[in-house]
Image (cartoon, rainbow, N blue to C red; front, side, top):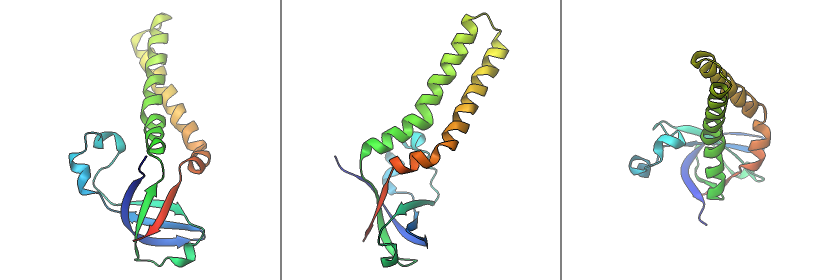
Length: 137
């Protein structure tokens, strides 16, 4: 399976992490999933861990790659699909228990907010699972 690659420019280097500024790809305009991936057309910074970070210089053109497409898919699942499922489960469960529509909606929103707080709390674990590699152009 092919990796997902983006061209970018080294923005800064902090220890063994190379921060790469990636511009929006022209292929994103025609992509049917662009609304899901969060691509808004702006530049963004991707952190790529590199054992040879000292070999890169600020301003250098590089390629940042996500090794497996499944990592990108799992990112979408964790960020969008799981919270949607949680929201619907809490909403329908609260309605089934006879809770009014307002409190049921509020409970589902609170549950989703708690989910995102937990997701933020475990971001270091997720960072270890989703790895970007950096390649000289």
